Length: 107
Image (tube, rainbow, N blue to C red; front, side, top):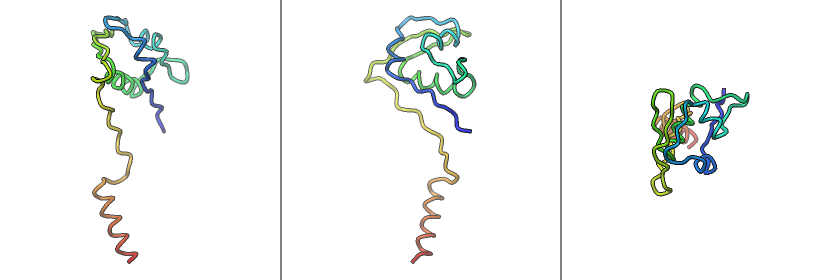
């Protein structure tokens, strides 16, 4: 099953200011208008992915259930994109070996 990715846009980041406090993830979701297709806050892997992606642009501190915006990163301090999982069936080295042997068979 394909999971929907909840990206962080400049609009989302521009809503956040240093020192803002959100009592829980539901309040943060309502403020940023980030909901799943059923209109409920993100859960599970989608929630984790969203928070990891948001961390690239904004430094958040979690205290219990509450979230505090520590710092909004300037453009030159934005962290690099997160690595995507390798959805290939074989490692790159093994793919190259298979391709090599298939090409030798064609010759």
